[in-house]
Length: 148
Image 1 (cartoon, rainbow, N blue to C red):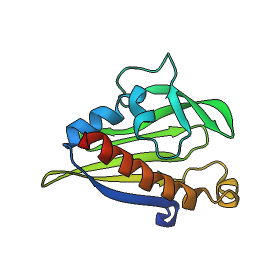
Image 2: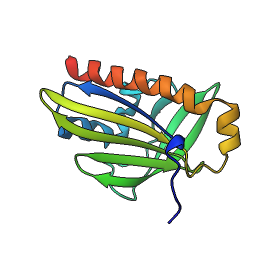
Image 3: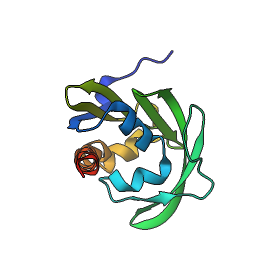
C-alpha cells in the first residue's frame, strides 16, 4: 500500500444544519451536486448518471472551467451516511466526511491529490489553494441549502 502524503490532502470543515443522512442523500444524488458546488464548474449530471450513487458507481457530469467539458467519476469510498468520495481520470479524489454534532453535522470536504496523475500541473495551476477556496464556498452553499 502506498504511503499517503498528508500535505496532499486539502481539508475544509464546517457546520451544516442537517443530519448526516440528509447531507449524504444530497451527495449521493449527482443531480443535486450543482446546487452546492462552490466552484461554479459543475453544470449538471449527465443523463446516464445513476439517481443514487453507490460504491463503484460511475457518473458523468457536464462541467465548465473556461470551456465546457464532460467528466466521468467513480465512487471509490462509500460508508453511508458518513463518507462518500469520488475520483476521475486525473486520479485525485473529492471526499466528504460527515459527523453528527448537536443541531446538525460537521462536514469535512477533502481534495486528495495523492493519486494525481499530474501533480505538477495541479501545483502550477495552484489547484490545492484554489480548491480550498471553492470548498469553503461549497460548505457555505450546503449550509444555506439546508437552512431554507
